[in-house]
Amino acid sequence: MTVVDGQLKSQNSMLLVLSLALGTLIGEVLHIEGWFERLGIWLREKSGNGQDSQFLDAFLTASLTVCIGAMAIIGSIQDGLTGDYTLLAIKSILDFIIIFIMTASLGKGAGFSAVPVFLFQGSVTLLARLIEPLMTDQALANLSFIGSALIFCVGVNIIWDKKIRVANMLPAIVIAVIWSFF
Image (cartoon, rainbow, N blue to C red; front, side, top):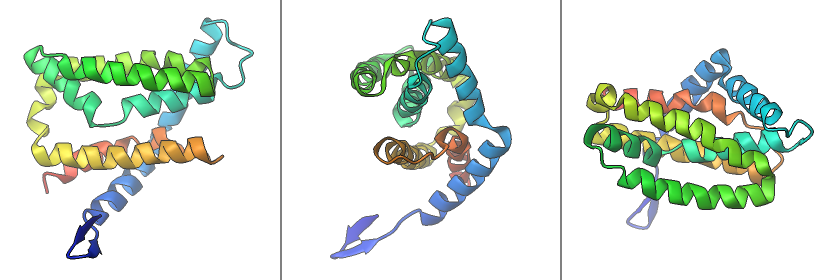
């Protein structure tokens, strides 16, 4: 939304609605949240935190917070293509602060979000040459827009006692990137 001549104007409403609807449908069919939950349960058991009832929620919330967004993807692509990891270094400092605070408030499961971050950013870095042609300015803008909406949903889960399955909404980011070519 923007303000033009004192009036509120909306932009990209169709992108938001269709990306989230189609992406969530795909995510629900694939049950992506279940993948994250299984990883979180496995980490909880292997780390000796089997009795920690908050571990899984802390892990899911922290993982989604730091994995969603343009900075993770752009930084990983930049590292993979040019070897310049500056953006990833900045992101890791920000992530450390965020995860430190989340660990204090949600529990130690938040600290284990480093595992999916490593897997996600490492995969994007390794695949950077393949996805580079797809990452136009418009694609990155769409990715950032939908990523912001998903981070908002994570915030709703934290603030209110709601359960929006944000991980199942992750394919919306791919839909948003594809949208930029039409």
